[in-house]
Image 1 (tube, one colour):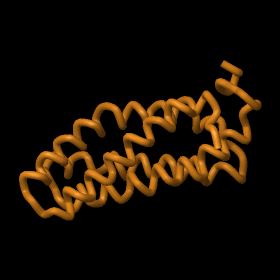
Image 2 (cartoon, rainbow, N blue to C red):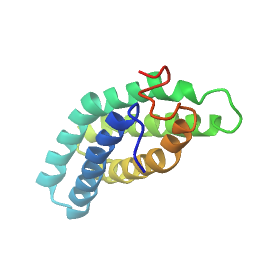
Image 3 (cartoon, rainbow, N blue to C red):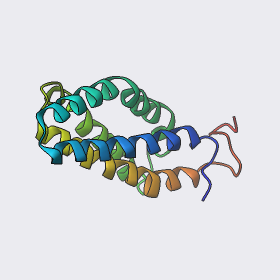
Length: 137
């Protein structure tokens, strides 16, 4: 299924996030301290930069479309909780914590799958067909 134009940029970023999640899991499973340190540094930088920007974009532009209805409010809450959980690992990642690295990879993978399979289809139900966004941009 083709994503609405409004969601396509976020969906493309999800592809990169899936690669990052697998990178984290492989590095954590390796047990190699140098590989873990390199992965933690990479992920901490991404989490502070690109991933944080992605979260803010979703929280500002996407989630308000679903807030307030009994059916969609749990999707908003799940998304915000996932973002909080992933953000909470930053300190441990900055300390090169192997468990945090593995957890981050697993949670990021689950989060992206949730957004692509559940959240985005729910949002698209609220968008006009062929819409560039909530106002048809």
